[in-house]
Image: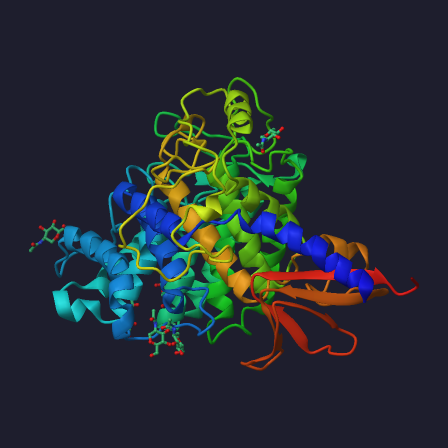
Length: 523
Ligand SMILES: *[C@@H]1O[C@H](CO)[C@@H](O)[C@H](O)[C@H]1NC(C)=O
Ligand SMILES: *[C@@H]1O[C@H](CO)[C@@H](O)[C@H](O)[C@H]1NC(C)=O
Ligand SMILES: *[C@@H]1O[C@H](CO)[C@@H](O)[C@H](O)[C@H]1NC(C)=O
Ligand SMILES: *[C@@H]1O[C@H](CO)[C@@H](O)[C@H](O)[C@H]1NC(C)=O
Ligand SMILES: *[C@@H]1O[C@H](CO)[C@@H](O)[C@H](O)[C@H]1NC(C)=O
Ligand SMILES: *[C@@H]1O[C@H](CO)[C@@H](O)[C@H](O)[C@H]1NC(C)=O
């Protein structure tokens, strides 16, 4: 017991340092605003729509614990939060100028990409499902159906059926796993068509066969099979963002299946997909260096042509929190926590210049000052993370963050329109920050399960925050509360409490500061 109190003091110190490394509500609003201003390409708009749902309107996200299909009407207190999502769908569908003779066609001009426009399909399907068409006379269902028929019947395929990412040639991109299968699965759930749900799985399986590189310990290649380099060259490198698209697309499909009435029918598919997500996490984290930021191509170290990429780092980390929530897989949580802390680290001018120098760039602006970030936000409380603020709230400058410019751009990042080159102002990168925040918030709200997975695994337990086999477990709940499992209400509320889990096995820690201490029984 005394040992655990000493441990609590250590934990308090550790936790307060860690808690500084979070974005405030104002910060997240600024990132949301940058995304709104910059997203223009088909996949950027699709990513934006889905990240807004995941962060601000979780009841209408595929990750919703309230289940799929989503509610068929939008509660009045949600109308303004969801408006930007519907306005994306409305802009897309009104530009199509559908008429009775229109047939299979992509939702937008994909600039040669057949896969990217499908990422908008989820927003369009949701607009139909919630009856938006009756107000503005747009046929969202027809637009979605035309996109589906285009994807299934017009886009070229490999001989074994993988749907090309490009329209003019058969070429598979890891990006496509995020763009197409989640649309197929969502379409399937909303129309009760399990064939489509299975096709989402089948496409991912085919893509994995072509893109997983067993000679690179299962990292995914970026682009293969193309025969027309004028249309678009192949890229056999292991693009970090591409591994993120693959893992994130798979998690969306798992969630769509799991939260639907057909979850049992697709249990083996969910199991496969879960193991493929984990395979990517294992492959990626084997390559990360001590900065805890991925390089643009995960297994290529920094060089004159290779740079650090915070966008893929945010994306991959977001998928680790999602995997923890959806799959109870906590094995890579310690890695994701390190990434998140590195991404949201306070500015330190000497380490910033070190990173920039190693990234081969001299253009990153230096945020003024080196103030502790948590004290500069409007929130004040160190435990605040960004949650249900309005996406259209006024924005404030970010300051004192190592990996964000003052106006809220993640940095350094790959140029999302030229994937071998460092860029500035990545719209998808801003979307990945929102995805990271959404998944992280949900994980924290569940009591940060598995935060100490590495240590628990070493002790032979591996049951998240709750168990250490052969060790004497104490949970320490700082500024949080203990909550009885399967019970809505806190039974014990304490600023600093410890509980011997052997005596009270049905309590878990809720809140920001859950940690777990194991003391050896023999001591
Ligand atoms: C989400 O849906 C649940 C169940 O319908 C409801 O109780 C809850 O209030 C909703 N949450 C929000 C934020 O609207
Ligand atoms: C909307 O109202 C529901 C109750 O109907 C409530 O549970 C939910 O938290 C509210 N959502 C927001 C975003 O205020
Ligand atoms: C219907 O739309 C198609 C495709 O946009 C167009 O080619 C055709 O002229 C339109 N037909 C009518 C009657 O407007
Ligand atoms: C459109 O929404 C209606 C319910 O409002 C649903 O019956 C129909 O299946 C939906 N169509 C598509 C393509 O999702
Ligand atoms: C499911 O969707 C596919 C593709 O649109 C279609 O061919 C098939 O008939 C649908 N199945 C059912 C049961 O509606
Ligand atoms: C800044 O970072 C460098 C290198 O990571 C470290 O040595 C130094 O102590 C840091 N300075 C402050 C004020 O934290």
